[in-house]
Length: 304
Ligand code: SF4
Ligand code: SF4
Image (spheres, protein in one colour):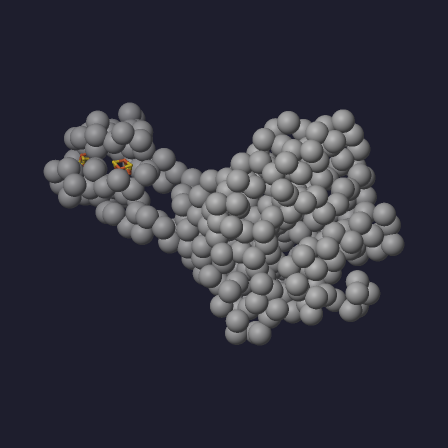
């Protein structure tokens, strides 16, 4: 079973639309949406949730009003400004979003009036889609440790792929190069970085590719919306060549992506014979061939 991650370094490059397009070109695959801070693959894949599980991470303080003497010590000690005073009622409460779970207030409360409970930071879902199973998640506002939630999504995707004898896992990765990206990238078999011709995208993609090099993951690039700056596209192609990274394809700017998304369809479903769909098929075929995944190509799309 192979794991392919589609990532971008920078948000807004079209990564999810391209991931969804590849999802419609696969068979025997589990899809994993690891962009847990702003997941949106579900907007195109329209999943039907089969199972859901709370994601518990860290602790949070809760003041018990009946036992609190309103001494204000917790308010003075909290370095995260998570204790909120109510001047009218002369009481104190904890802001769940601001509470870092350090436990200082719990330790020092003279009345032992503060509970310290497990913090529910999000949800993890196992869903059915028209292309296959999807593992996805939602991080609640203020929920921390999205890297751990990503690890949970990946663990469940691997378990499901193994139990269902799937051929591979297609991962929609988070932007950036932080903890969630590292959690998404480790032990993958290939990275496809989606970039657009802008200096910020080039900068962030280079950091992502350096990270993948560190993990010895074979990496490739797709330049999306290349025609908004042919000059910058040329510069980027030269930069990637210097890094030894192959550009598997270039996609022009086209509103057809937006039109497909409005209809909750992949670009392959919306405009199967269009230029973008043909280019995406070609990119997918190259990616599969690069990684010797020929047996996993779909015959229904006639890629082979
Ligand atoms: S330290 Fe304890 S008793 Fe004092 S205000 Fe905070 S919760 Fe209430
Ligand atoms: S646990 Fe720490 S962050 Fe949370 S309210 Fe208490 S002192 Fe503040």
